[in-house]
Length: 194
Image (cartoon, rainbow, N blue to C red; front, side):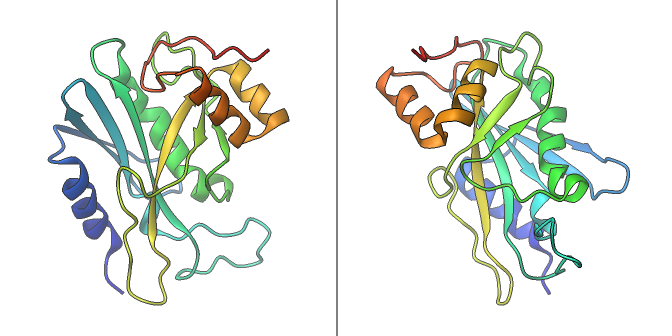
């Protein structure tokens, strides 16, 4: 089996350019998670590298399959210079480690909560996992491995997260679209939810 991570990093570089910074976090009992920072004009993107090394497995399964199962990395995009968003590295690594630590399968439509601001002063403690395939194309791997999906994360305020639990991810995304919400604004206010 080929090592997945060099292929994942090559795909990230091909889509986002050369990273201008990288940091690594290791949690007890988990593989190392790196977070790469890519700057593109006034937008900064942070992408995980390491989450896709192992497939995510169903938490109800008796044994985790070491080969089959969904694989993913996380990507979050914010406007540069408006907040100390580099502090998102640790929360992002925590989210990327959650399949190993908590046995969750991260998929589009899911909410992920870190229980603290994503960066200092951020009005967001959670994110909505969006559909893959836009910014970074899926990475096909040799059979029988599942492809790696690059899942965009959309920061949510606590009110938006609560509203999403009741009305669903699609309804929240439509609300954002209708209101012209700049999801890359690191200090944006909650979308009107009335």
